[in-house]
Length: 457
Image (cartoon, rainbow, N blue to C red):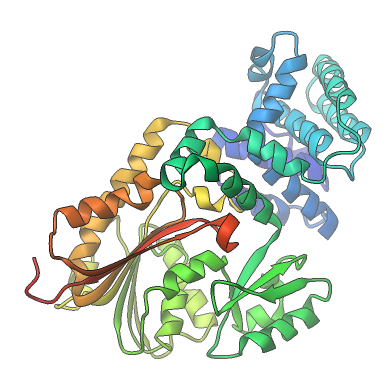
């Protein structure tokens, strides 16, 4: 069956759904969150508990893949070659089992091993099932009892490559790296929402969500005046409060980035690299739904989501909203004709980046950063987008550059290079770093630059 996922194996089984998602992520380059959502949607028989287990297995395994593979290789006859020789689905069935054994104290190791062995016996071969049984039981035999309370974080820390630690250290200093990474990983159970102040205040929203999610732990955000931090609430997009447009789901640090723009009613604002529009919605909120907001992204489907979300929040009725599907590394596309002749009051660049500040929410990041060329490609994109963005800022206007990572080469170098070529362009320049261990948010580097008057270079 090669790497094919046996579809008949997937009905109602959280472990095998997780193995399927891991296989799609590894073999097809799929994004884990989207692949997981699709897999769960195809399995309506999965209850809330099993959906939660599938999510934990996918995210946890992705955060710890190098550790899981090393454990499997340690007890295989031919070491890593034995694991690499397996077809992707079989390898991921084993990874799911090892993750349960090493990280989850609520699942008996024997149950995790038996599930993997039975699946491989049924849909692969008795020989492979025997191999799995021997390797997995030896791993289970060394499992500490009880598991440390922070075992999942410990495993994830072991899996982070030295090169990533060095890059983070280039910005924050090597002595801060462990603290930052640990705090980022410990935030995986926390989600944030942003109140829509045009429809409800933050205290009232807290009370409303507490009624709809009785078991949730809700507190005020610390860095954004619009944020609530929430744990144990499930998928909040199913609440009536979300459907009524009373809030948006957005990480608190991302809220801070957009709030730093200082957009006001009546302004002309440009959001480059807008994605699905979380930060666009913050800008529109600051503008109280009045003014001109242009949003640019390479992917038309994301811009459709942006429009729908602004409409749900009641922000687009009186807003001159324009969306433009443009690859900014190539040109300006239709934006060139639509832009105000004298430029924008605010231009925000939420640049594509390595995303190391978002480890809590994006467990497949390490898979995408293994190749050194990926870093070069990202910095090239950041430079190209910034060079286009600077042309759209009117005198006295604001250029806001942000990356959700904590590396000097992405957070500072592109801005330094831009301003070095334009002496006198900046009348004011404010740099902000958000850290998981200090600020309780995702990690960001943010530059807010005010352009000098019309006579500047």
